[in-house]
Amino acid sequence: MLCCFQLEAQFLDEHCGQQAISTFYELNNAVVINQRNEIENFTQDWIKNYQEQPFQNREVVTIPVVVHVVWHHAEENIPDLQIESQIDATNADFRKLNANLNALPTEFFDKAVDVEIEFCLATVDPFGNATNGITRTETFYENIATTFAPGNELRIFQDDLGGKDGWPPNKYLNIWVGSTGGFPLGFACMPGTCPALEDGVIVDPLVFGTTCNTKAPFNLGRTTTHEIGHFFNLNHIWGSDSDECEEDDLVEDTPLQDGPHFGCPNYPISSCGSNDMFVNYMDYSDDECLAMFTEGQKLRMLAALNGPRSGLLTSNGCGLINPSPRSLNNNSILIFPNPVRECLHIDVDIDNQTPILITLHNAMGQRLFTSTNTPDDVRSVDVTSLVPGVYFVNFEVGNQSVTKRIVVE
Image 1: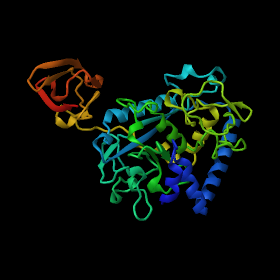
Image 2: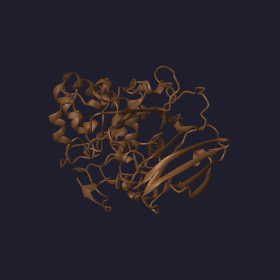
Image 3: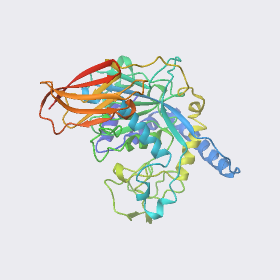
């Protein structure tokens, strides 16, 4: 379990709370220390053996993800499409398909690699049933991700504490999306650190996903990329401590640096006798300035996948099933947020790809907006030009029709 007074003290003014979690477990549990040492020994041996083997083509690994949305305020109950946008953004980051790749300094451009790991929202749950890879839990507790029960257990991890039980961590990457209160933005468990009940990633909903995410400068989904890096055994690029050039992240091709960077530094910026790689996903720079993993970091993640995270390689979480057809109905359309001020998000979840007619009417029945899209192309609508009041959004496919009421503030 996590200790509230130690974690709260270390969470302040931090982007990521991983170090606080690791420090607590390693200081208070000799078993964890031994596990971490064994995992590190395995990691170094695996990397050495891998580098000595002849080059072999390797298939891209797909990791099944389950996202547990645990919400207290309605705006924390983020829509499916926002969750899907995070999966897309993380896949781009891990596959070296991120849009800002060309902005890398020349010194680091050739060091950026395709990690060859992808992520999918699970389609099969632990019981073999169809799923969309998303669970939703309304909780009584504010800031559920950093709220502790009397036994010093984080509530977000357990049903009976107001949170959500995780799925088996040897078969799924569990991501809990719940309010941290703003600090940290997220945290994760390194392999061998946390008990199975808590093994996964936590991210604040304000920085999760890219669709309708206005939490700049953390609106490109890179908090989640950073935390998944920890899940696969990556340290912060400066190591475990700040202001210490002797500390290392145990990766050969990332330069030593004396601490994290914030904002978007101007290249070059130096410490420890070399230029700092502030564009690395494992630093604290703003999302728009993070753009790369290195070959050494890739090898550490592959070692984790072939060691302490190896169960994910044989998971059927993204297996094919034959779900029941999804037709247009009230439950197949999600509108968020409501009330809305700027960006109205629309998520249509149906199998039929027939063009869908979307119309917006005011309370007087006047038509203000019309659009025809396939369901997959329905995304969001800018409502900043509308005067505050009640409006109605109507969706039509063939002879099926659904109307949603919205309030513009």
